[in-house]
Amino acid sequence: MVRLADDGYELEALFTLRAEDLAEADLERLTAEVPGDESVLRRLMGPGPKLLKGPRGSGKSNYLRRAYYQLQTKKTVAVAYINYSQHLALEPLMLRSEQALEHFRQWLIYKIVLALAEGLGASAPSSLKISAEAGKKYIRQLQTSIGIEPKSLPPRISPAELLEMIEGWCQETGRTRAVLLMDDAAHAFMQQQQREFFEVFRALRSRTVACKAAIYPGVTAYSPFFNVGHEAEEIEIWTRPDSADYLKTMRAIFEARVPETHRGLMKPDLIDIAAHASFGLPRNFLTILSDLIGDIDESGTTRSPSAPVTLREVRNAVQANAVLARSLFDEISRKLPRYKNFVEVGQDSQSSMIDAIRATNRERAGKGAKNVGVAVSLPWDADLGQVVSLLEYAGIVRRIGPVSRGTLRYEKVQIHTSLLIAENALSLGQSPSADDYLVALRRQSADDFVRRQPDGILDESQRERCRLNLAPCPRCGSQRISDDAVFCYKCGTALQEQSVYRELLESPIERLRLTKVKHDRIVEHTNIRTVQDILLDDSGAKLRAVPSIGSTWSARIRARAEEFVTL
Image (tube, rainbow, N blue to C red):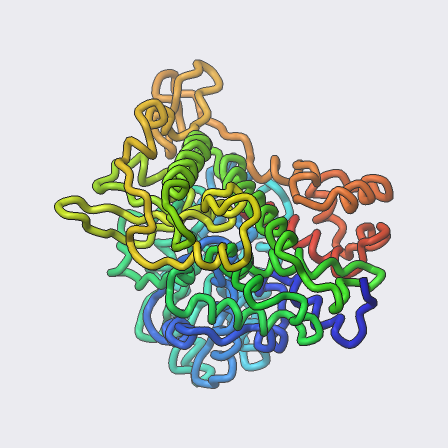
């Protein structure tokens, strides 16, 4: 270990995994320029509605924040960055109030108003400042008074009225148009909320106003009148690991995030293995790198530049990343309980796919490219499609397009590379070299996918389990007929659901995946026991009082807690 000097501040950036936590200067300094960047940013900053699609850690917030800062330099554009990550805080109210959907709609709208006022700053019109001030207290009450109706209500604004107001503010400030950048939107809202969000999104469209929203694959429920492609262009930003520029892209991220003093810790071939293992997700890549380079705690120490990273350490970091990827998938059943049965089936399906890949790779002689996924015969039924969508939502698999073999068509499904390495599915023997890994992971053709029929991925017994997990009637025990049912179809009793948000707040801190040392010391030196305890420690004073937890780790633990309750 070595004490950090001038590079300490630089190295801390490696541990800042979310773009929302970076200041403008840091975001610009720490973001690598990669192929396709300009195209994505140009569409985000231009006219017309857009949907930015990708799993957690794919870079959606990074693009939105960069577009925001670049648009702020253009005096002809009014720009707002709106983060909807705290939507789950409204869930308890959604379960108990007849006015819940209206509160949610006003929350959506006033978040936009506040963000516009912030974006325009001193040049914001007085009417905008008045509306923003009225909405600020309302939003705070909705997000902090769990399940309780706000005591004071601001003037109600409809989506059509908001559109007219934005156009008026643009005219008043001399702006030709407005761009609304919506982060953490429409990916984990309750079903009614998702539909409401897209109705608001669809209504805020004109020659002057354009909305851009970040969404996840797999779980987004659009409103009946919202058609992707017609209402908004979809932009996928998940970098394909088999693309020609993939390693170049990941190396650029390495150069941007790791300070020069520590770049020599990893040989180029080990960097490439970590890049492959990240499965095209920059946050996965940074997580692996931070595990390898070391920890930053209150003593200000980290790995010595004279102690190079070994292949064994890379494998261990990749295995830890595989565990993390699976845990994120498992969490879906807790945070989106209606999909619990699909998640359980998905756990079985991912194991069967990896087993099939391992078995086929054992038969593939030599050290050439190995199988990295499955090609499942088309067509798929709805159950298989939903299971794969949830796996894709968590970043466990990725659909990369169809391929034809004679009269048959297959959908190629690539498996998370960390899982393939951790499960020895590449079948590289007992002590593979770095070159063995790199040769095995060079995608060369569609033949690097094991062909299977749908029944080989999802058998009949598993299909029987593919049912939405809906809470039964508390009075007669009858199952709900749909996710939207409000009353029991048999006895008419009002149907209730347990609050997911309350459960998340009450979760023990073990769920945050802290190291054993840090967890044990938190328990020993503080009364922090639940996720809510961490969130209530606003200043982080309690955490910073714990040995080995300084300002860096305190911020990291709080960020994990915030992300845990926002899905």
